[in-house]
Length: 413
Ligand SMILES: Cc1ncc(COP(=O)(O)O)c(C=O)c1O
Image (tube, rainbow, N blue to C red):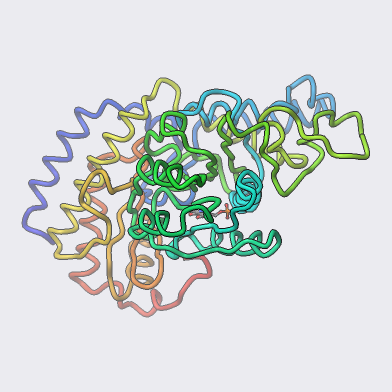
């Protein structure tokens, strides 16, 4: 246990007492005895969700039945919820659709980007990107006769200068899922534009955690998860953003009937809807979508600037406490380069995380040696931070993670 622990406990108590977002924690149903540092992977359950789902199942589905498409406005849910997500991303209404998975949205938007830049066949992507992004980029590139070049983010600006007029789109993660590094979205978007290319951002690890200002920075396309910081629930639908200036020419790969201009005309040929609705595909998972809609109530009256300030203060404190233990973090200490999660290196990450989870501190593990901790400022407090590191220090000091039961690796880490 570190000698500085009493000071850290006092520091955390002061920060919690002055926390302008402290009251927001009541908008979540957190189990007793748990410090939940995995809201960057699956957000905690928002208090508004159980009643909303009860209503969706019993009244809307059970009683109103198919009339709900009109009576309960199921039809407009993807655009309605898209606009609410858009408000958190700095996107004016009419540019975000909620639906499908991030993987599907990546496939669709890379196709859309290649078609928006005819004659250009190169997609620049991050070799360290979340794997699904690369798998899908390569699949759509193969289908459309394009090429994916894996360029580390630090070399991206230079690569744009060199590859210039061949690049259709840069497809990067806003926050690195493993290290927690925040990328320079404004600078790299501008660099893409200077080369005549588009910028597509995967916002999975930033949506709901920090202000993004998509419109202000002229981002072209973006996708992201509903189940991480937005806390929409397991398998919650994702979202896609298409900047207003691109919508009329945006031609996604998956042209399903919900994206048709006249879906109930049942026409034999496809005509895309004029607005962002063209990014819809097929029938959405309404129960999950309505759960996500209710989850967004947790953001009512909450400023994303305040969320960001608290996210940085929480991760500052966590990084300082972890340094007290002599552990190495992969996450940049510079605020401009940090999302809302921290990666701590340890040679036995699976055993250490299993021991932590057994003691009520929940994070996760990413290969090869990363203990990953996410801090959702809506429901994590400063005392949680200090207590979680106290438990970590105790495990490492006593060697509790060497217990044989922690050697068995779970399927999902
Ligand atoms: C950056 C990033 N993109 C995409 C995904 C996954 O997308 P999907 O919801 O389709 O599984 C994740 C999941 O953790 C992610 O971190």
